[in-house]
Amino acid sequence: MEGLIRRIRPAASLLGVIATAAMMAGDTARPGPYAQWRNGPPNDPSFFPIAVWLQSPSKAQAYLKAGVNTYVGLWRGPTESQLATLKQAGMKVVCEFNEVARRHLDDPTIVGWMHGDEPDNAQPLPNGQGYGPPIPPERIIQDYQKLKNEDPTRPVLLNLGQGVAWDGWHGRGVRTNHPEDYPEYCKGGDIVSFDIYPVVHDRPQVSGKLWYVATGVERLVKWTDGLKPVWNCLECTRISHPTAKPTPRQVRAEAWMAIIHGSRGLIWFVHEWKPKFNESALLDDPEMLDAVTRINHEVRGLAPAINSPPITDSVKVNSSNSTVPIAWTTRPHGGHLYLFAVAMRPGETMADFALKGLTETGSVDVLGENRQINLQNGRFTDRFAEWDVHLYKIAAPPSPR
Image: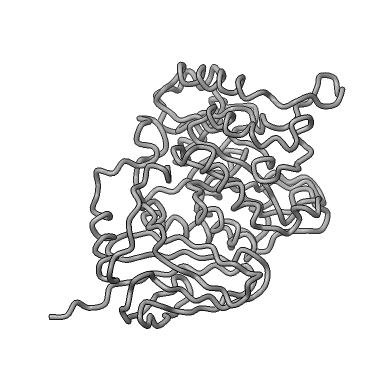
């Protein structure tokens, strides 16, 4: 996807940048990432997929209220009852292809098909005899072709495991430390996703290192040559950790790290096994549910900007704390320049943003924070606390008459 986007050189003035943004915002002929599938996700610049993983359709209304617009996976489904419930709620779904699904090829509720989860991990052997090797990429590609032959009107989602981001993931068995497998796996899907949950991870190599989310997204964008939508899963519960649980600040940082590095869809993993099993633990956690709802509505509200082509090499960022780098992306939309930024390591820093080649003075809106920052000679400075995300909207100054 990123590889298809034409790169825009920095304009000679802020007015030039905004003019370029306005021009591209009006470029309605530019196809979206789902344009090629008649029955796929909405081909609408204001649509950003926000999903939950393997949830009961009976809870669809609660998730819609939380800003979710897609289900990914249906337990032992799809069944007729599951699809009917989702259709009544107005919830879209990506599910496996079975005989029930075959009878619903014209049902707009289904927007995609999926493989079995994490084929890149070691696979369980029959009768509890341990684990064998991962499913080889060539078999995933063959299964993908079968799905495409059954229904070419919908994309196929391939969700991979944490080996996408962490080469040392022992759960790949004999294919641990073999990242070269992944470009081949990526040929077996139209949308490629992965999961890693740093806050609740049980290994010190990953535990607490939120940037592994960004690493995995960045790798999938590279391994797909930027030609396929990349989605990723996010943590918001303890999952299986007896004590650790992500905070709302950490969860928001992970979401925006993913988007800034190229993710075009978020999948919330809301299950919890400890202290007891709860399929929909997010719904029973008021603080986290409120945080996830805010993130979902924030992302959906900014979808037209997120879905706009990035302006590369447009900003230079200096962090006063060298141990806390700032990741960023700029997007044009509606006559404004949007700059999304996140602190990529724990700690605090002051970040100096210089819009390259610009000398204008004006103001910068900090979205969702009810404040503005002065833009002086094309530069502005802002403070980043630990795992902070700041979303900036830069408007053109009045034109001289």
